[in-house]
Image (cartoon, rainbow, N blue to C red; front, side, top):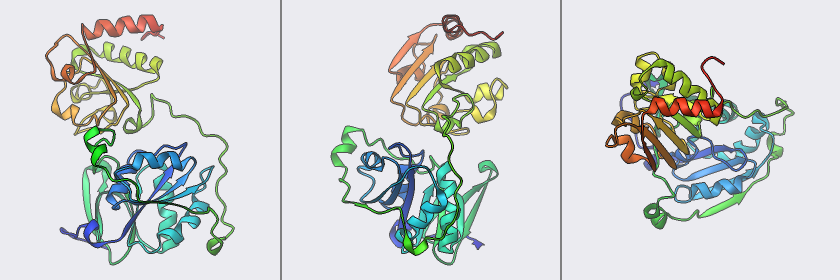
Length: 329
């Protein structure tokens, strides 16, 4: 494996296929991006995969569905390998399940694994190292397996009327069996005892469905701490702008924006956030945005579905009072 500065377009040269684990009918973060990068061919495996097919209208053309419960990466890899063997490039999203499944597939296929890719080519990939501070351009001599970092490709919202009208339907949906007699080795998987829902306060911000964000308009670290308590009481994750993290009011991994974390929440509540382009560019396309700011003309207010013109710290304090939370608890 050697370094290179140039590579061919994966879609024009290589035959690619995506493998995406589905849980309760939901694609993981980066799942649709991975299918698009693979040119629309995908194996969906997990529970309620048929529901996930609807999320790929306009993106996927050929879908193979394997219904299975209780995530078992060793067994699932054996079931998948015959379906992806002929593809030059096998792509998985860099989600927890994707990162678990990818090395097993690579081992069974006898291929190198390029993990944490931000760009895929027919002859290799650019992969992120050291938290994205270093990019390695890797070239391989033949077929390979790769995981794609969520958010690096970007996709338009398929719920947009203009996109839905022009989007092609899924051409083929096939069903396959979980069992694969050819690879029926008695490999053992860990037994799933319980799946515990993520804690919004500690989960990866990139995967949070509801986020409360704080900006410089909060005015003090105490107000930011109080906002965190409000977010916890509402079952939301806490994020902030670059100014907030630069001041030390939040850890860097909670910074939303192009120089922080790219998020994709369904709901975003912005308190004292002015809406700088670097911050807004990392917000994705939330279904609902609520903004609270004393400045009615700031960019964040114009982007909001509900804009509340009031003092953000005062509203945070009132919410904390009504929710029964306090910085002294």
